[in-house]
Length: 405
Image 1 (cartoon, rainbow, N blue to C red):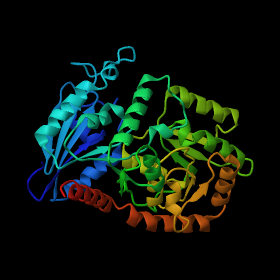
Image 2 (image 1 turned 90 degrees about the vertical axis):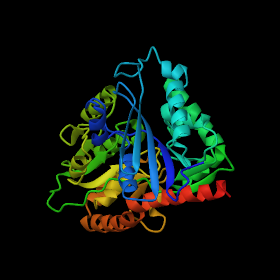
Image 3 (image 1 turned 60 degrees about the horizontal axis):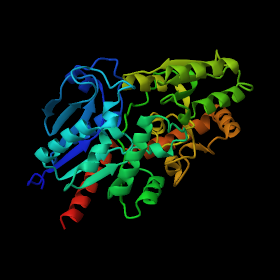
Image 4 (image 1 turned 30 degrees about the vertical axis):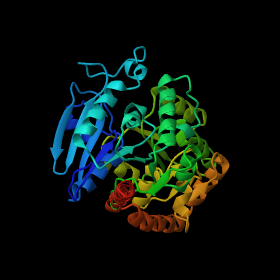
């Protein structure tokens, strides 16, 4: 098994989309970019000479499967959706769902046997349309690097057949796989509820970095940049801003991100009902990562009252940018303060306290500076992208040492 050389041959099964892959595959701008940590990880792997990496990923909006190589990285792009069309299966004809993603999984199995890797790294157990492929792969060690847990989401969408399938697949992966990569302590505890014998490895997800630019003027008091869903706490933040506005009538909040049209309309109506129309600016989705982060830099503080998360990219990216952060005490967020306060943490759902912390931080520039500096020093070392990939490759080697005796 494997490459038979000192160079590790690894397969990543994942999904992602950025501008580079979009151009190579001819995917239109209708498909939004996602999973930026995969592309950032690939940049680090490309710098190494001890790994041959094969990336197997599904893509919407392409007519046929494609493969291309750049140095030590080989991309296997598998089309999904309706044959001969650049569209996904319609809701009334979910052929992929009815067959448990058979055709994608079949292609993955064939690729695995041709590549003959030392190890497979599945990035995320919660996305059934590609994650389910590992359940039928035999004779190869699999590391599941956890991105999050769909089963911890508080919104009940059990009537949605796709959500149900995702929950089933996630549970089977947690129960049956042996090796897991995590980035927060609570994740190991959660996995062992399903799988007491699971072996756990710590790693860090790569994050986008943009140096704080002193030339960028602070325009907003608060920034929220994340997917616009209830679980990310956007409603709590809007309500907290309403409370703070009684003391700070000119308070400003900029919201960056995308969400379903109906939910965005709901949020705008909530803002109107609370009399905050002049206080809140919707920027929508900003596709270019650097452009988005430059907009984030215009804020004095970053607030993400998320209800369920690992270690949110919003929080880490804000820390990199010297922007002080307020977040809820969920998931892996408390780990960031394990040996000293680097961000402000509030009990989940306590909107009055959230408002109080926002007001205090906005009124205390010295505290903002000190908090931001401590946070920056921590993430500069702990969340270094090269170090993150190195930790992942060390996990691969430890697993292979155990498997091969």
